[in-house]
Length: 224
Image: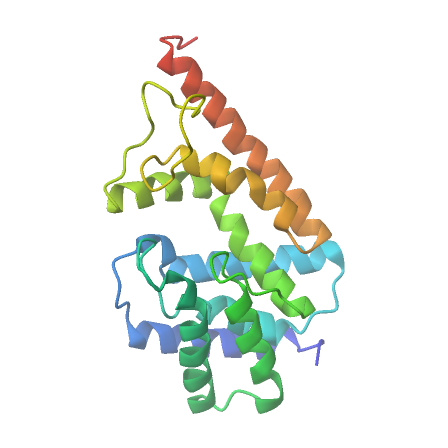
């Protein structure tokens, strides 16, 4: 089913919203809050529209709203299992809502494979769209806000003031937020699964690169 009518999608979206709001948030990571789910869905719609992808939008909608229904901190020893746990929780919730059984497996796969740390390859078009849409949250202005928010939560330093670009040391995004640019964020465009997602990622990665260049300039005392 790839042609779910807009009214049906809206009805399901409202049911997902009601479910998640009743469920509440059992973690303190505001970068993975309810509004994150909504943004990922909007981005997924842009990707599908621009690519002309014949994806099952109900599957994508469900995966976008439930992909982070279980969240583990970045420094949690089982962080790589979070998407698998989220898929299991999503299955339980969606079955309780009488979500179409024929589409449930595709939703769970999209949730399991969205995670960067899980390393699960997306095998369906829907999973590829969801993965790309979620990774866009790590780029651009939102990505910039999130990386420094997360470093603050983890009590990491913003950058190494003596060697911000790690010219004479190993990169360590467990210590410095700026190192995360080189270790992950600026590499995301090459991991995108769709043409539209790749184009979006390349544009927004340039935004991060421009920010980093301005930051390095200011660290030299140049605010021009």
